[in-house]
Image (cartoon, rainbow, N blue to C red; front, side, top):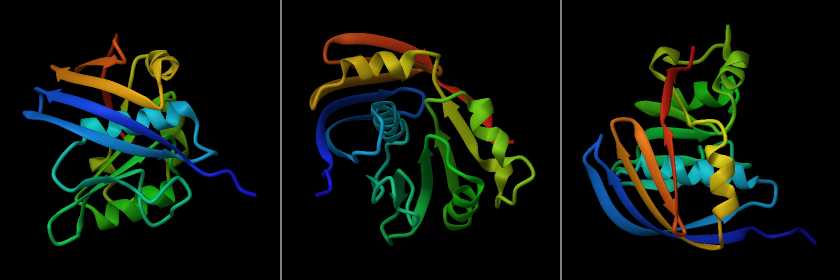
Amino acid sequence: MAIGSTIYTFTVQLADMDRGVYDDFTLRAARHPSETDAYMVTRLLAYCLEYAEGIAFGEGISSTEEPAVVVRDLTGSITAWVEVGAPDAERLHHGSRLADRVAVYTHRDPAKVTAPWAGKRIHNVDAIEVFSFDPGFVDDAVRLLERRSTVTLTVTEGQLYLDLNGTTLSSVVHARPAV
């Protein structure tokens, strides 16, 4: 018998001063058994940092048709394709052809994530951004993770402040081009 997904519930207060986005919402995330805690925390951060009308988690870690986080307009068209972790060049190429914007959020070394993309065919690769966090930031957040978590996320001048269940962590949101 296959192991089912574990549901996590996040009560989020978001204040992204860099983008002028402020909202309070509850977010339910299904963690697939093959998904690491670090991946799930990065997926949560990507969702919050990309938060916009029409945002949703993709179909799941094994889906080839959708990214980890997707933003759709009112017509259902994909406006942002947001990958998490270390997607391959083919997924980025596919997403870049479908969406106006593609971003990757990683809990890994961004140089190691982007290295396999060199010389590969990726549509509009110059417009793809890769976001990462200070070393140890995601691991520290993983240790604070609970099935029901309270999250306050504040971004100002590229600095992220994350209060997770009463403990505050901070990191720079590092941005770099895909190639």
